[in-house]
Length: 48
Image (cartoon, rainbow, N blue to C red; front, side):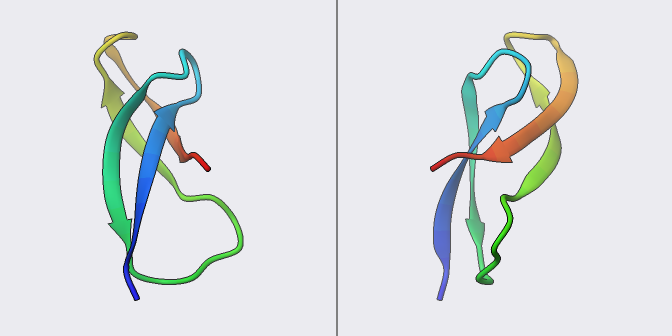
């Protein structure tokens, strides 16, 4: 079952990306993405 997740920047907190998680996992998804507000590549975590 696929689940849509929202990713937020850890530095500024802006919610820039959304993706689909295809597996059930206990910890939050973390990806390194480009943040438009910070203008750098930062870690983005799954929000609730």
